[in-house]
Structure formats: structure tokens, C-alpha cells
Image (cartoon, rainbow, N blue to C red; front, side, top):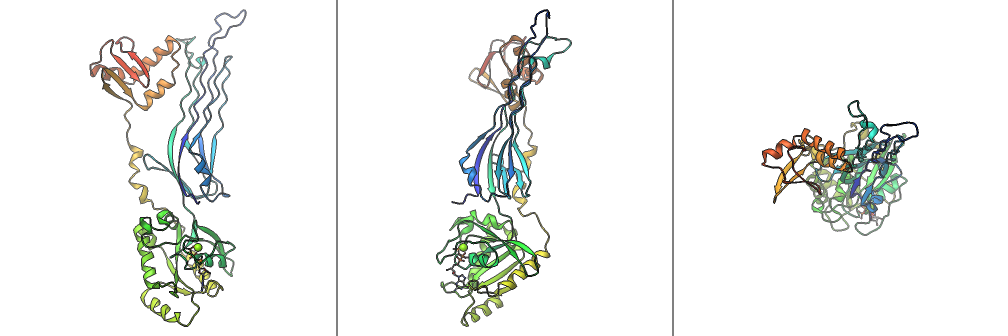
Length: 426
Ligand SMILES: Nc1nc2c(ncn2[C@@H]2O[C@H](COP(=O)(O)OP(=O)(O)OP(=O)(O)O)[C@@H](O)[C@H]2O)c(=O)[nH]1
Ligand SMILES: [Mg+2]
């Protein structure tokens, strides 16, 4: 099966924990703090590998988790950073955030790579907190949790020319004659299930990439046949070559075929129909088809080239013409920018630093920052708890609780940690 779209969850590694230690050596009294910092957690990266052509490997990776950074140790020994996890994908992979729909990366070029989830910072050891006023801090930090994201990963092929048309009109046969690609060819419909790419060369040595795409039928834009899964590949071609069976031997009308395909393209993404196009009238091998060709040319005002794909007759001309067309159009951004426009706002969405709700008799505090602070606090010493309380106050949580009527002795909860509110220590 050809996979060109998948969902994957990535969880970057947590930072290593900071260490709480003191220097204790003979003859050195009050040696001071001696705990090292934790190492950085592993980040998760996507990287282009030109040897890959499908996203099939990703299907087996539902969740990718990065390792944790090493914990800090005594004698001020810092933990090692964890190595990044690299997920290899084919060129032309697009990554969006599944929750917001926001575009994260469009890996168009050979050497593209992108960090999709940043590893957590290592927690600081107690040495790092040493100040003049507190020369022997009695607390250390836990490592920061790594970023978590659910990603929608899709692959769009990058090709110069896309062969589109009904099933069995001869698209794969054409590609096999004009390039070294060897796609499967057969007389039944939907022989081609995934796109094939081939490099074409003109007599004067110019080259371009041609894609043989799976057959389209009426309703494809709504999922009929192989559906819109493959229409997405067409979005990434610069010139459209409509392949038409001009013989009509399968009982179809070539003119209607052309209009049906145009309509499907229009329904899927109207910008495709604005691209330069030609018609390849295939299976032109009999005097009887001359009439069909004449009618077609009268009706459809697009350059039409009659060919006979099984023998290769007429294909040189087609390749030459396609190459000339490509010389005259600029390389453009091939995906439709507008598709993402409505999501860009998410980037600027202001997130409240915290929220407090009263659930039963408990005040529940939520928010990324507060939860992160909570996870990074080691509640094993009074000093650590005090530092946590001070930070909450600085964030304005204290004031907000008071405003809501919270009084001494009331229950307050952050994640699964419950404590009693006290005006003096929070
Ligand atoms: N008579 C005749 N048959 C042809 C010609 N070109 C291709 N065919 C035949 O048409 C049939 C379908 O060809 P394919 O190249 O597999 O067609 P396709 O458009 O790739 O079809 P799908 O992959 O199913 O969409 C095969 O049996 C070919 O041998 C031609 O010029 N003349
Ligand atoms: Mg085919």
C-alpha cells in the first residue's frame, strides 16, 4: 500500500534532573553546594532523505519519544545532553500541527531539516542557585519536560509535469516510453496505485521530471475511485498533461473525458486549472480516429498532440514541447499558500499564563507555565517548596486566588498536587 499521509505523535526528551549535593571533604568545612546540572533532553527532528519515496516507515511509528538528558551528579558533574532523534522523510514532505492545522515545515529541498519538538532544558543543580545572599541553596530543579506534539505528515511529489487522465488511457505507457521508469502497465483500470516518477530528456539534452499519476474518475474530488488522495500530488506539478484516449474504444467520449477531469481538478483546487496545459491524444493509430481528433481540436483550444504510446510515435514532439513550456515558466511555490492562511492566526493567539477554576471546594490552577514549574520542582526540601510558592506569587496567582475568595485552609490543586492555601506562604 502506498502511504502518503500519516499522523504521528512526537514527545521530545525531558531534561536531566539537577543534583542536590554538598561538598564534604576532610579538612574542608562547609564546602558549599556541589550539585551539577542535568543534560538537555533529546529534540525530535525531521530530515529529508532523498533515497525515500513514501512515508511507509512512519506508519510503524505511532509515537516517537526522545530520551531524557542525563541527571546532574555530585562534584558539580553536569549530565550529558541526549542526542537528537532524527526521523527521515522523503523530499516534498509537509508537516502540520494536527491540533491547530498550522504549517510547521515544508521540506522541499534536499538538505532540509526541521526540529518539530524541542527537548527539555536540564534542571539546575544547587550549585547554580548559589548567590551571595544564599551561599548554600538547599534545592535543585527537575529537568524540563520535552515538547509534545501531534503531527500530520503528508507527502506531495515534486514533479515538473503531471500526467492526468481516466484509468487505462495510457499514462504509464507514456512514462515508460519517455523515461527509464518502469511502471506497471495493464488493460484493467487503476493499475497504477501510487505515483511513478521518471526523468525525461529532450534530444538537445534538457531534462525534467514527469509524474504518472493514478487514474481519476468523476467524483474523485469527493473521494471516488482512488479519490482525492492522489489529487494532492497534482498540486505539485507545474504543467498539466491531460492524457486522453482519442480512440474512444472503451466507449467513452474524449471531449467529455477532458471536461470531466477539468471539473475534478477545479473542485479540488482551482489554481491547478490556471497552470499551463497540453493534451496528449493517445491511441491514435487508425484512420477512424481522425474524425475524433478533428472534433476534439475544434472544441478544445489547448495544444493537442496525437501519439501512439505503445510504439512511441509522436512522443518526441510532446517532450520537446513540454520542455519549452517549462523553460518559460518560473519555478513557483507549488503548494497553495491560501490553504494555510486561515490558520496563521494561531501563531499570535495569546495564551493566558494560567487559569483558575473552582471545582467543588477546590481551586484548580491550570496553565503551561505553572504546570512546567510544578514538574520542575523537587518537593523534597522546604526550600524547594518555598521557592515554588514565591514563583506562584510572582505570576499573580496569589492575587487571583484572593480575588476569587480563597481563604486560609482552602484546598488548591495543580495537576495532582493538592495543598492548603495560606496567605503567608503562597
Ligand atoms: N491500442 C493502444 N493501446 C495502448 C496504447 N497505449 C497504451 N495502451 C494500452 O492501454 C492499456 C492501459 O495502459 P496503461 O499505460 O496501463 O494506462 P494508465 O493510464 O496508466 O492506466 P491506470 O494506471 O489504470 O490509470 C494497456 O493495455 C496498454 O497496453 C496505444 O497507443 N494504443
Ligand atoms: Mg497506470
